[in-house]
Image (tube, rainbow, N blue to C red; front, side, top):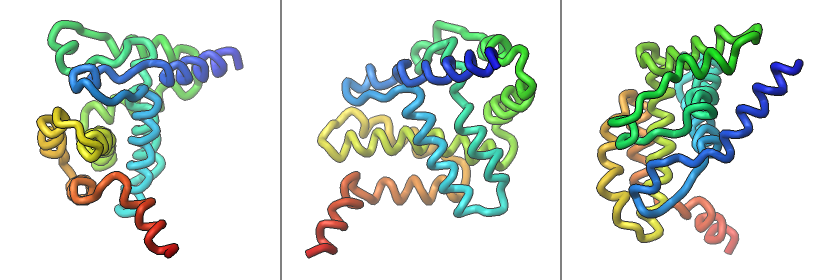
Length: 185
């Protein structure tokens, strides 16, 4: 159980690791754990809209996709131009001695390869989580995210990902609760 406790503390550290791309925007902030939650929730939603996928695999893949960043940190596009990480080694070290290590490493590798339906949906969920962040910043008046959001939208691969992306772009960030206030009057 010591190895399990270590794994849980390592996963918890993701709450403290900031996503580094927001520095370039000049606005917004998010931890890796916050991003992983959002990505996983999007994946859950996708699994309900596309029931022919393996929902547990999709959701698990999204939950784990950035787990190695507990050891490597979050590298944005600029960082990746100059810094090379060994995420497989970080994951191998983190999961050494766990009976389910091969499941974790398999899901993260499948996500990275992006060949299965679940991996493509998971990658879209990952991108959609960023689209939500960027759209929210745009909706509250920040200009720089406008230069990024179309590039992220263009990375979407699946039909359901593209439909969700389009809906996000057409929806203001606060409509969900403003609609509640209107319906209560």
